[in-house]
Structures are given as C-alpha cells and as structure tokens.
Image (cartoon, rainbow, N blue to C red; front, side, top):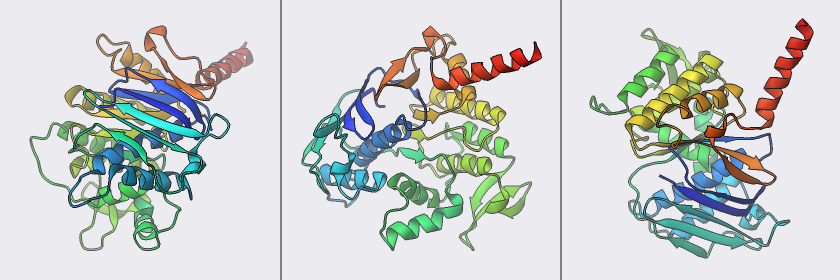
Length: 338
C-alpha cells in the first residue's frame, strides 16, 4: 500500500505532499485542478515498479518509468511534463510500509530518466487504472494503435487495461473477492463476457447474449471491474485507480459501488485512489468515514492553489466547489418555493 507521496513541479501540480494515506483515497476538485493528472502520475510510477524485473524483461526501472510516463501523458519529450513556472526539475516519490521510490528529471529530458532510486522489491500483484469511460467497445482499436501502429492516441493506462481485460476468467470458489464480484453482477443484472469464438464482448442477461453496444455505459464500466476480479488481474493486494467513479452511473448505483469497494477493503489489502465530481460520492464517503473505526482508512485529497492537501472527514464535509454548487442549487430551490 502507498502510505505517502510527494510530487514537485509535475504538470499542473507545483507541490503536493500527502502522508497517512488510507485504503480508500478520494480525490476531489474542479476541472483542470489536476485530479486525473495526479491519478495517472501515481499509477505510472507504481505500475513501473511492478513491471520491473518481471519475467524476462531486462529493462532497468528508470527505462520502464520513462516509457510509462511518455506513453501515459502522450509527451514527445519528458521535459514537457515539468511545470516550468515552478522550477526546472520535477520529482516524484512514494513510500510504502518498508521502502521507498524516488525519481527526478528536468525540463531538458527527452526519453530518459537517470535519477531514480528504487528500494521497493519485487511486487507480485497488479495495479489497474479504470478511466472515466469504458473501453470494451474500443479495446481492439486501442491494442492496434499501440501494438501495430505504435502511435499516441490512447494512453498507457488504457493500453494496460485493454491487455488485462483479455485475460480469461479462472475458477476459484474460495476467493475472498467472490462476494464483491457477485454484487457487481447483481448491479449489472448480468455479466460482461468475451465470446471465445468471435472474440467480441457480449452482455449476458438472463442467459441471453446481447452485443456489447446494447449495454449502457454504466454497465460496461461495472463489467470491466467485475472482469478484472474474475480473471484475477485484481488480487487482494492490488492498487486500483478509478477516474470519475460516478461517470455513467445512476446515484443509487454510485452509492452501491462505493459500498462494494468498502467491503473489498474490509476483507483484503486492496487500496483505492478515486477521483470524483459527484456530491453523492463525497457524501457517501463522508458517511462511511464517520463510522467507528473507519475514519483512518478513508481519506479525502483536495486541491489547494496548485497543490493538494489532505482533508480530515472528522471536520465534516470538505469545503469545495462541488458542495458549494449543491448547496447553491438547494437554496435557489428553497427561494423559489418561498
């Protein structure tokens, strides 16, 4: 689990030092505040650490992280990611329970990072990034653009996800994640499956197969998460990054999905980083955090100028534009009635 991170001068983030992270970390803020950028930065670094030393891959960790950052942020040169108004170099560091990772590069960097220090050993689990929109309907396009055309267009988080979704499910009746998988299937009122003969995604409802296009955006998004649990790409030690968790989901489904995530972290060592614009997400997280014993594992990260700070749910709902706009609309409604 990532316990703390520090980011300096990376993209829109001038300085962010967050410690005492929890099992569930909610990231909120306005558009262009850097929420997705923060998620992708953390994912890129941790995914690179996971890939280091795997199988017959002999690349050094600095080579892996350089490639991952370029393809995730679609940058011709790494130096483009440096916040030039704040300094000439950017740095990222992560700390887990027993070790740390740090890296630094400047605005003149092209395709290489030389200043990397990795004390984190071999990791035998997968982190995964689930974007705001589903990718099942464009999975083949993503794979072709990267594996054959090798051009920018779909970032590395989407490419990694497209590959992970191809893995076939495996039966494990004793898996601690099975209960959550069943809840996701109930929410979808079916399952999302890859037909072995046609290699096309299908929505299975009451035993009847429908083309993936007949399933709603929300069902396809839930289906991606269910598939990753079913094929064991997500294990009890994984880190899951979800961008705009509410996208494509009805408020009742948003609340239910957060309850599923809450159950997952109660049973496993899973860690979640979740970005959101939704009042329903923030309110549900606040209610969960205020339960006895949960205040320490549900955290809220929010922007402060061009940085991010930690909000403690003990202090109630955070002051931010999402809450303010919800209150403003309520007051407007009340004024209209009166």
